[in-house]
Image (cartoon, rainbow, N blue to C red; front, side, top):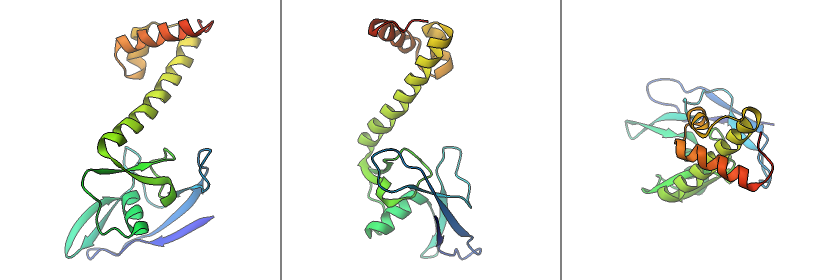
Length: 161
């Protein structure tokens, strides 16, 4: 299914129509992700749009705009971040978004990213038998973390390469 929406026209140019397509959502979410296919996200995977509000340009993450509009907020509250429950930064499905305190958002997203990194490092270690230092270099963690992972995996059972 394709969802069509019009972005508010900015005073300095004609806004392009935004087209969204459904993408599979992780287990546990009832609705699919809605991802814009007509505009490119930034290098971090977020889509930003610039609006003209009361004569001034305002740049906002599109998922924040969607959440605000869906919940009737005029502006995003200070101290909150918009968390993607689905983990897809390009997703703009309102049911996949939630406001979190900045500190809670960091915990949630860092835990998820760290777990994904550790899983990839474990697969790499099983395939290569590399050192903790080599894991650290490859996966962007400290050498002590790489060595701790190996100690943990070795203690958990017969997973050694």
